[in-house]
Amino acid sequence: MHKSRLAGFIIDCETDDLKSAGRFWSEALGMTSRPEPGSGKYMILDSGEENPYVEVQKVAHPSRVHLDIESDDIEAEVARLEKLGARRIGVIKNWCVMEAPTGQRFCVVPAERPGFAAKANQWD
Amino acid sequence: MHKSRLAGFIIDCETDDLKSAGRFWSEALGMTSRPEPGSGKYMILDSGEENPYVEVQKVAHPSRVHLDIESDDIEAEVARLEKLGARRIGVIKNWCVMEAPTGQRFCVVPAERPGFAAKANQWD
Image (cartoon, rainbow over all chains, first blue to last red; front, side, top):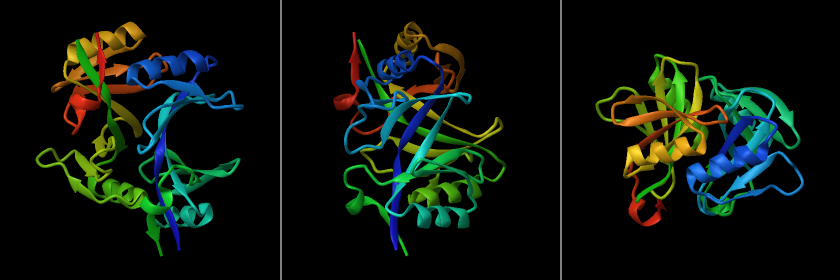
């Protein structure tokens, strides 16, 4: 038995200038932004605590938007998604990159958003 | 003076089988889904009324995820975003497709989500 839900969206930007990328999306969406401490790769936009997160990430691949699914059991969640037709692409730190049968890449990440235990979906 | 905010995310799927695409994302995200009446192009996922919407769209271009910005004045919002560095790609029905300086396509759409007037950002 484990839980999962939509965690948020990452705006992947192929750039060396994370600050400018973060500034554009912050102003476009009308959300304040702050750098994720330490990483140098993410700007966190203030999407509201109850909402899925929105982050700008500096990446080396072509720009895109991807979504994250958060779970209290990454392996069980990845196995569940594989049964639905997704495939495992690789592991980065403590999250798993997957590809949907419809072609989009997405990540399965450790549950961190407030309200997870009460609001996430439970899978038997 | 006009308002805008993040409206939601569209999961664009290059497929002729909208139903299967909708079923995957519905089960992956643990959200019920329903077809948008009449269009045959969208499945609406139940992301919660207060949250940005999540929809699955059947498209002819490669699969991706894009975001929508909703506004009570499309022309004013597009002009604001152009000043930030985005460019106008084209108009589809009553929305405008734009490209961010960081490369992602996104849309500016008429405001429709509940709470827009009270919660959107106001631009002078």
